[in-house]
Amino acid sequence: MILRGVAVMATLVAALYVWQTYDLGNVLTNDWIDSHIKGQGIAGEVLFIGLAALATGVGLPRQVVSGLAGYAFGLTLGTGLALLGTVLGCIGSFYYARLLARAPLQKKFSTRVRSLDDFLHDHTFSMTLLVRMLPIGSNVATNLAAGVSSVRAVPYFNGSALGYFPQTLIFALLGSGVSVDPALRISLSVVLFVASGLLGVYLYRHFRHGKSLDTHIDEELGADDEPLNPNPQKTSAP
Image (cartoon, rainbow, N blue to C red; front, top):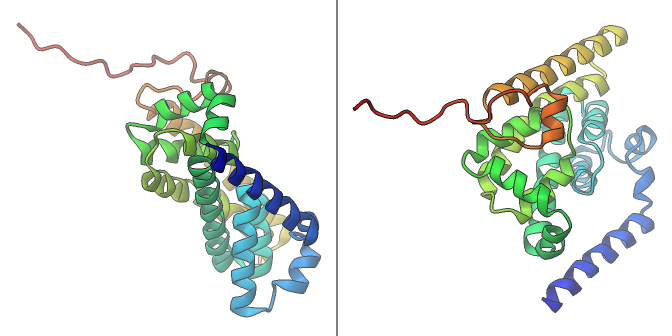
């Protein structure tokens, strides 16, 4: 227990040191991307993936990373690199919680952990996909809660990757320099974002296996008035 606590403190101190030393707060900007990422070949791609993983792992919105990826690499490659970086960030925060910070996180967020554990446990891949498709919620909070729960890692990562894809594509399109009129590109991105959000709400309301992720989320999505057990067990006729 003592060694695990020391490890947690060491990782936090190391993260703070790296953040301040390399001024990471000003790294993911268009000017910095122009200077260090664009035109740098594989080295620039690898650097971007690492920064994307770190940034999304500590809570930077993945939509920002996707937009910068589109700006730096174009739509197709940018989508792929942003998705890879975001998934690596998901894996990092998940295992940070599971291996190092399980006890304090379970104590601090016990209600959220229990709710997520119950929601994901039986159908981890499909239910994770539902969570990622929703237009609300915190990516890093979900990863940390999943890490300290009993959720199986591989289905969780696979469901996350597939669920991340629509918004990654949309924001990479928004940030890309594809030969489309900027107004049209922005309009198309907004339409696709709204459509993906509505799809996520629909999937959550109809395919959640009678589970509730959070009562507040249910209220916001208009799912709180639906039965929590829509497919009751049938009894055989006598």
